[in-house]
Amino acid sequence: MQGYIFYFMISLYYDNSILSKRGEIVLLEIKQKLIPRSLTGTRPGLYLNPSYITVHETDNTEKGADARAHANLQALGNSRKASWHYTVDEVEIWQSIPDNEVSWACGDGRNGTGNRKSISVEICVNSDGDFEKAKHNAAKLISFLMKKHGISISNVVQHHHWSGKNCPRNIRKSGWQAFLNLVISCSDSSGIPIANTVNKRTVKLTKPYMHGNDIKVIQKVVGAEVDGIFGPKTMNLVTKLQKAHGLSTDGIVGEKTWKVILKRRTLKLTNPPMTGEDVKEVQKKVHAPIDGIYDAKTMNLVTKFQKSYGLSTDGIVGEKTWEAILLG
Image (tube, rainbow, N blue to C red):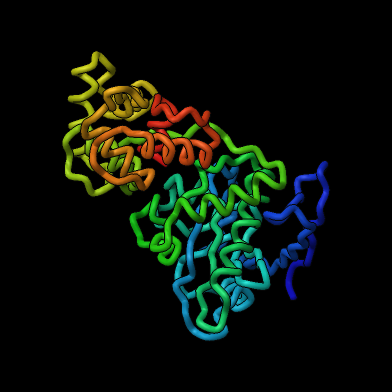
């Protein structure tokens, strides 16, 4: 076996602490079979300072298509120009690329934020495996990587976030927030801090065009076609928004432009209750009945949502909660 095997043992003073939800000792064996440096098509050797963890599924349901098989595939030379850092199944975790090197996994181009800023974790879906156990192992690995690299839960994202691909397919179907809650349960028990802010990347016209859910948020506000692609038409509409608010008309969505785009009224429990389309927007995100009335049931679901993002659980939808609702 190429590379080496190392173990993550429990230690409250060392980055490698991983506990289960019940708090008992858990041993995760991370096996390495690194892609040879000579295979520059899939291991480009570019420096990576990770600020995201991107979650994928292999989409390979063949029997035997487990983590070891995918590690072998990468080490022997993947025929596709695609690669990733970790593959996880119900019993093993295999690493193919070091955490400080770029992989080609996110589908947003050689200079895309996903590829250049993410550690990519693939979860196996082979028909002879146990996907639920694989998913739990992935959550433990992700919680470890969060602590190791200082990455917040808001920066644990789907492959879909970068390219619009329906990936991770099964997790998206069963509920992305449920998976994040699983990661958080591992993070809480191992002392990993959950950041209380949502990352807003700077969005601008690039080649290839930037993709993602955050761009859909921009497009909804500026009146562009909502396809999640930041092309020239979207940029031109951003400049009009900037001009209307006295901002620099550079078409770049930075901190000041984001503030305008994310601006919403503060929602809270009142008598009579607050109503409107913005309330429906909140209800859709927190899985409340979508009737446009900010009632006690909606508020309680907002507090649960706030807890999952490490926010103050006051049931008030203010600036930070709006960011998490719109961009999380």
